[in-house]
Image 1 (tube, helix red, strand yellow):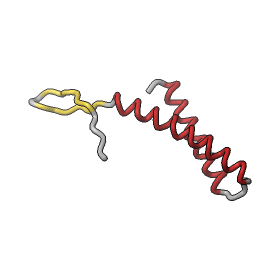
Image 2: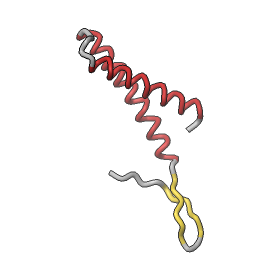
Image 3: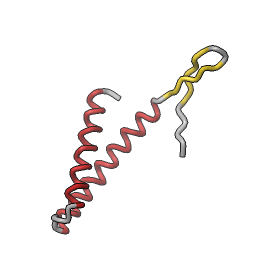
Length: 77
């Protein structure tokens, strides 16, 4: 992940954590909760998309017949 994309991911995740903390505090009005939820939903989508991009680029090295081979990363479900 490039430094900019990594920073964007980190900032999005940090903001998402802030929103969750504020929502869990119980101090927000219903209108504020809805705005936080909408913003959080967008941030979850941003983070998910970035993680999917990274996942597609991940390859693991496997030693086969004395050589290291790059093979596609297989996600465990």
